[in-house]
Length: 222
Ligand code: BG6
Ligand code: MG
Image (cartoon, rainbow, N blue to C red; front, side):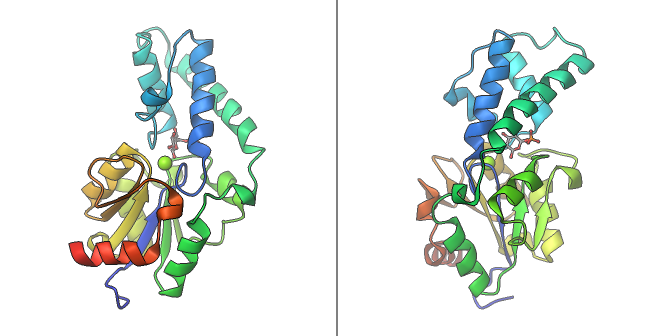
């Protein structure tokens, strides 16, 4: 354990490391329109951190079309959304890392604390490669390693286990309501980016994620 008593910091990807949360929204909006269903940014808050198929179910329920399709049709629709999303990913470059994130990662590393990623996205590797961040994480928990999507704590617990860290002495960083619930259910300290109920520390944007302030808040709480 390092001198601050912090054993690991685990980041969400979409919406924390880079603004792919917005690309997910645009891709879902396009698919929803193709199905004659309207979704807006407020509704999209419910999709953040939620797996592809679970997100599709929420959209179908919103349009009252949950009983209209077979599993094969739903898989085709989820695949179509992913094609829309992957089109956006082609534009992603290292300059799309959100403000403050590279500094935060460097400060955590300087304290000798391992860094993990907890993303339910099947595109996590593609996104990290496009941002050239693939070597920054000591352990990556992604869709291939888990069975349950956020808000289940499985992905954060998997990340802590992979880093050899006790969740009670670890920190999670999230931009989604489902993600904050997952962090809290795992026993970790929750840092929320955005107006997120239940966060132990909340900031309005990633540029406010200052390591000294996060350490101070963690120390006060634990
Ligand atoms: C999460 C996003 O990180 O990944 C969700 O917050 C998304 O919006 C989920 O649905 C699954 O992503 P993908 O890339 O596997 O469709
Ligand atoms: Mg997110």
